Length: 188
Image 1 (cartoon, one colour):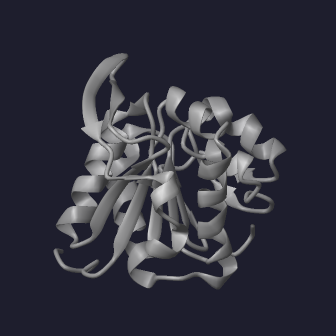
Image 2 (tube, rainbow, N blue to C red):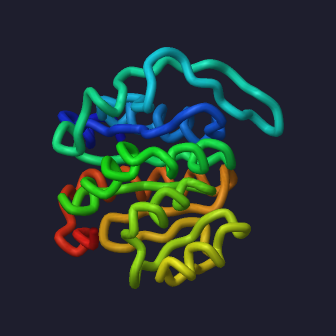
């Protein structure tokens, strides 16, 4: 269904080492649904993906963190990859950017290792979600209820485990963005 997200803007927060398919596939689906997407990163220029165990393609950054705020967007997408969230969670601007989406009740979608940013943003207390299994203990220690499902939606927070879950992840992500602000999302 095209145009179900017409007029919606989605920030995709990533840096070097993001899992390529976890950015490109959801972005393609968001664009097909009519959303405007921006690749947001700490620094300008291209960032390099990780693709099936090797370095992948370079992707041009549309906006840097110092050029944007959560108020510019309707939703946030956090792709995984091991290196990507590990670097971003050490960046205070990235963490504040994530927190602001929760404070505003806006839909946030995170896949694979992407939820690691949610730990650092301190927005997981009492939330139900999933992720790549290797970080489930970290998520539980941050107060989340971790479940092993292909996709989990909790009041505007959409999460999935891995690239194999992308079809279900994309469908729910688009549904949550279409629904808009979720007052229960305001946990920050």
